[in-house]
Length: 252
Image 1: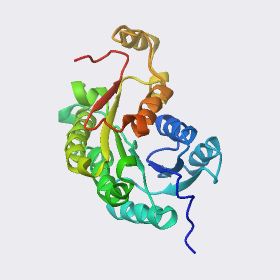
Image 2 (image 1 turned 135 degrees about the horizontal axis):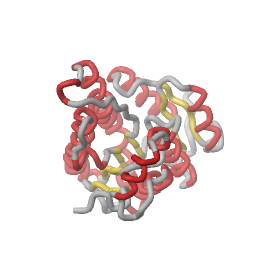
Image 3 (image 1 turned 45 degrees about the vertical axis):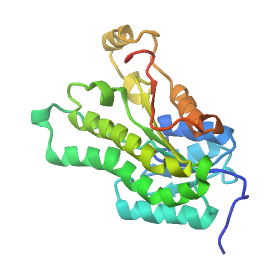
Image 4 (image 1 turned 135 degrees about the vertical axis):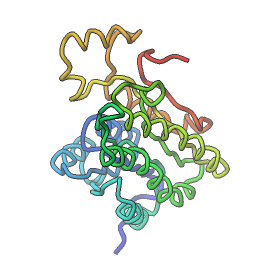
């Protein structure tokens, strides 16, 4: 028997939602009244913590799949359609980073980053578009890019290339889907307080803060608030944009 949620309740899929920015996004969307599908790849325990943080199975569900696996994505989105009959918000957050200078970057590492950070966005947007188009004016796609995808960064050739590609994909899909009322935008975080930045040496952290006009590293809640806004009815006339959450690190 197919289970469906109440017709008026919007459904969101957030990839990479088991921790960090993804978890904060799931919590923000839940607080705005959405039923949140929490994607994760391996860490089920962390994903369970996210589910509990949004109130448990009445307010969300876990959905395990690898965002780099096209077949798994198609099956996952199909299952959302069968269970809920709708998908209103797609947040492409999952990403990996394998850093290295150009001459030291292995082909396998390049391909893994491109597959996870860029191809996954294409696969998910394509698979989810049919459900999102049915949502019409409530349909939202929000893709996570990065400040380094806009400005470049030494030693991150694969990551910056993938994140720059996300911006181009976002702008193109915004044009393609606008006629059906579906908006497509990107959120571009700067340096955010995560496990990686917390491990920075004090001198490196000091130098980093010196580059940020607001004088602090961002929080995951800062990013989640931007995503939540773009997912809301208030952002219905915004599409094809890159919303920067970087404390002024990049201004143009």
